[in-house]
Image (cartoon, rainbow, N blue to C red):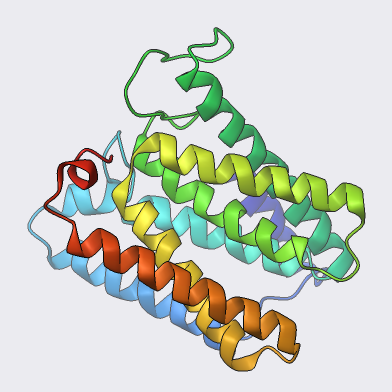
Amino acid sequence: EIIGVIWLGLIFRGKIKMPSLKNPLVLSVIVFLLVMAASAIFGEQWYRSFWGTMERGGGLFSYLHYFVFWLILITVFKQDKEQQKLLNVFLFVGLAVGLAAVAQKLNLPVIYETGISRATGSTGNAAHLASFLIFPLFLSAVKILSANATFAKRLFYAACVLFSAVGILLSQTRGAAIGVGAGIVIFLILSALKEQNKKARRLSLIFLIAVTLVGGVLFLNRESAWVKKQP
């Protein structure tokens, strides 16, 4: 909120400009918030719809803060170099969160709430942990494929991918796991159809067939004990 006040002051002084409402992304987010506000006003429990809950937040009040913070980011960090630095900071945080989940599962005394069945990391909530780690997982994977990435940066991005994936598995959140699987399938389909490099297109097709076969085997054996005991 303090940053928001400073940001508004910079807008009024003409130092930065508000994003255009003609931007489809900005417009879609505003429409989403308006629909959410309408549901909060006319819903059964407007108080809970507006404020959310202590465990999950999720109320209109929280989403308005996220919206303002997003506006601050896209209006302040405009240069590609600045955006890349911000992205790397985010990925570093994602790596730390993934490491915290592993430390929690190993009962290391460096983090709280050890000795539990599902890792919650620094968030205190297994579902929140897994949902958050989806972003550094895919963003790091994209950065690994970047043409201008150095070997050291690729190692860092690979570590982000590894510990994000491990954190999601340790959280035992099926929704996040399904989301990751769907994201991988969509990526492989798009790569197989639109990738200009023939070798990359062929590899994408091979991986897509492999993922489809594994998914088919799991589905056909969904009543088997070895499938049911999986988290």
